[in-house]
Image (cartoon, rainbow, N blue to C red; front, side, top):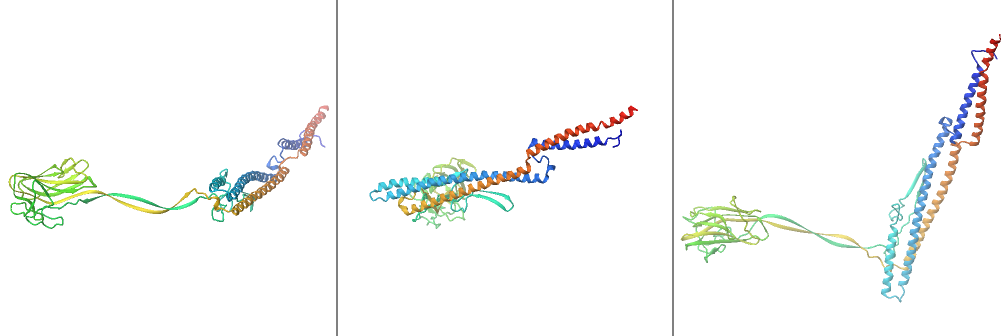
Length: 485
């Protein structure tokens, strides 16, 4: 080999070998310290991918294992409930047998019935038991129980854990049609009555709308007595024609009433009307009148402040309107409300100065608001539940034999389900063990093999370092040759 100063191929080669030995030493050290065969994805990219999938599958299987344990606990609670129901049915069968004893009187049988009814209530209570809010015993209209766990490990392949159907309530029906724990239902007719009230303004009937006419509108003969108006102080109120000096109103068929010769003083002509059931704050009274001589209008004896002059050439209109504050006279003056719920009287008072006297009233109208009620009745069918349980006499001994056989079948079903769930747990545990071994072979380091490799790389590192030092001394030999000359 040529000896030179500018280059040292031996030292370069030794340094390269040292670098490779150091890399191998570091990888071995990382594997031993972490316990993993694959420290970096570059160590085994395919193996890392397989190991991750196996790890995910192991976690799913661990959750399935937990679901299986919960399912077994669920079926164990079912088993406990069914055992209690079986004991209750056995006791019911005993009560039925004892009630059939001819030496037992009706009081004894009634005592047996009391226990029988309480045992039915207990069956109903057991049927409502739940596990974490999930019913232990489903109703008959469900083909499968709601609690189930489905885990898909591979596309198209699934593991389903479902629990057995076990019923208690409404399952024990006897030949007579009666069912243990079922209330009797009674359908009744219920009538609902509603009343609607409304306020309607309607006319108030009076004996006549004018003086000198009958209630049917026909005129009273001249000289006859108008019995529709009462006159205070006089026995009669004679009808007279209106003519000449009397008030003239061609639109009315009414006539004057009074006397051709009367004494001096007041004459009260009164008409009564009924306000029973009428809203006294909404009554209207209107009319036209003339008097001989001066006159005024009174309501239930109270002067309304309406006056008629001595000159009675024409009828004078007036109005009375009640409200919450009182009575408004002719739309201007307000007076206290004197109306009453019942018979009321409107009076025209005439002050006669002597000679002929009388009063002419026309177009009397009285209206008020009446409250009417409308009652409607609706009849409907309503089913009520009465807690009347069936008695011992509603079942036969054969019914109880069938009930006990049904509960035994249900318990066998629970036992079969528990056995299947236990087998599923064993299969799951076996799969976990094998998958864990497969994952370990891919991901975990072989400590014995890696320890030997570490010892090897350790020796190589030290040897390479020593050789690098020896190779670096070759340039010094060339310098010595120059110095010795």
